[in-house]
Amino acid sequence: MITLKRIRSSDKARDALVPGIVSAGVLITVAALSFICWRRRSRSKEPVNSAISMSELEFEYDAFVIFSSQDSDWVTKTLILTLEEKHGFKCCVHYRDFVVGVPFRENMVNSVYKSRKTIAVVSNNFFNSSYCGSEMDYALHRLMERRDNSLVVIKLDDVDRGKLPKELRERSFIDLSKNVEKEHWERKLVKCLTIPCDLSQEQIL
Image (cartoon, rainbow, N blue to C red):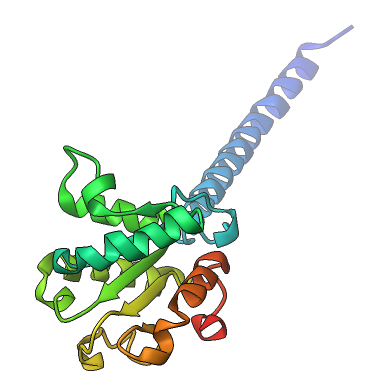
């Protein structure tokens, strides 16, 4: 027969146990929430594309071509025709591929990042164009950000090399102002566009 004394003793034991269970539950909950917050902060500090290889990215274009409108004759009749008609590359050029209604600078950024490579046709005319300067800045930003050797320079005339951004002055480029390079520019450029972005340009040219 259960006595009153035993009932009271059982109640006291239970009352002593409840606070301990509650405290343990609170500690476990706090620890779990702290861990979740720590993981979120850690992940937020990781580069967005750190786990994505450049070879895994899908691009809409093979090359975005930056050039001055005053050099459009050579670009449209020689460069674009050679790359698209002869070699089957898909180029992005502002007069044809920029999206209507989208701010011009937004079109520039999108074109740089949607293209596997950016081809800058530099000349004296190029450095007199503010639009060319902006497009070059965005292309350089990607180059420095991803270290992907995505920027290819074609020197069209005798423009001073010193006008190039300092990040490009010591890099190899295609120089059409030299007769010897006029014979090989097409081969070199096609090779640049078919080699993965993570290969050094010096290994290509």
